[in-house]
Length: 161
Image (cartoon, rainbow, N blue to C red; front, side, top):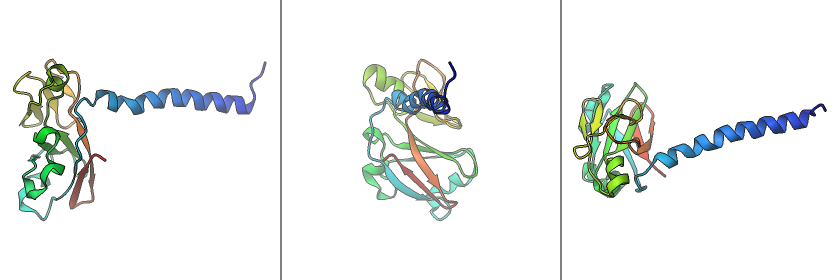
């Protein structure tokens, strides 16, 4: 029995959805740190505070005290947010809360930045800053919580809504 054109298109759509839908949910399954309202804009070229972010490979840690932004820049439980410049136009923003300690013990331990990795002082898990905050060593299995970034050449917007 020969399949009609409509049947073939339907089968193709169904096959595509069966691949795409699980991938779209994957980030949520790995995002163990609870959402905290986050929304702030950094003037990368005009604010001397952020001048280190003009070079690829550099980072800056934003806290609730930075530029009086308050909790909208504090990250989960005010642990802060790591801003990392990966390329000329790509920035990553990570919550400083260790996902392993939160998932296993319910604690909110701050990771520390050591060059291009973030390291948890409690469990020893190391996370790669240039590659999305994935685990590179240690007991952790979840990546750092990522916040959305948008960059227009001067202003970096960090948000999660």
